[in-house]
Image 1 (cartoon, rainbow, N blue to C red):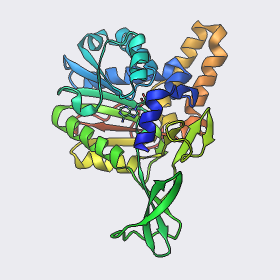
Image 2 (image 1 turned 120 degrees about the horizontal axis):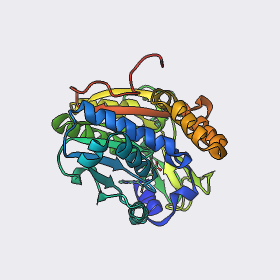
Image 3 (image 1 turned 90 degrees about the horizontal axis):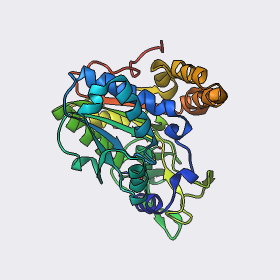
Image 4 (image 1 turned 90 degrees about the vertical axis):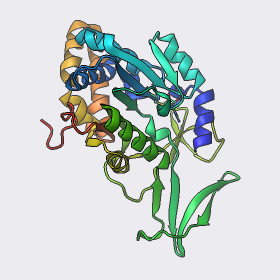
Length: 319
Ligand code: SAH
């Protein structure tokens, strides 16, 4: 999965195969920019502060966020140093073409020390998982050979799940979350992770492939389709907590965006741009309606333990 996705992102335009939240409407990135302003102030307005995005895609989210930051909190706009973590040369070029004043890195470890605010939208779902299947004789790891899954028996699995159960082990995502949690706990700051996935771990086969906007066979033509899994937010939070950080959420994307003022910002834009009003309202519904992206997508905040709970990720009934 790691090698197939590295080839896929390096050679294809992923946005021909799927549409992400920032590509649906400008309000998504603007609200995340406003979120970053509030968090920066709650950190004591450090200058400089690192603003990091992991997997920025076309750069749309960051362009919308920065426009909002410079408008609502120009001091943060001056204090921030922008770091984009992106492995794909194609997408780096697209981000640079937007004029983002950034330094690029291949991995989070390469971003210089300092207090940080990190955003990651639909980044972790692209990282590889290992899958284990419960067979009559015990657990097997799924390997891929000549375009098909093959079972390789593994020892030491005592988890009791019915035959046919599939467990996904997201070592890459959990390792990333642990490194991020360790960094934030040691140096200060907060991160916001948005992705489709589940709040609780448990057996499920979530591997899927998308090509040309349609589901495809994940084992067919490696590198030609986007391979993704549903993110295991419980496992991410446990890894970051173990590394010393505090975790808030996950909450659903619908609840998070509503709390941040999705409806109000959409209506303000609709009034100012009557010809775009219907499209703006449709974008807001797509992002937040429970039957669309609102419930499937979750939002987790990983933060320094001394920070107040950032806006939108409070636990409990939505207000
Ligand atoms: N956040 C963007 C793009 C999501 S697609 C959006 O919401 O539109 C996933 C992004 O992660 C792409 O930019 C891809 O090139 C990048 N990516 C995938 N694997 C990566 C890795 N291992 N390290 C850094 N970036 C990676």
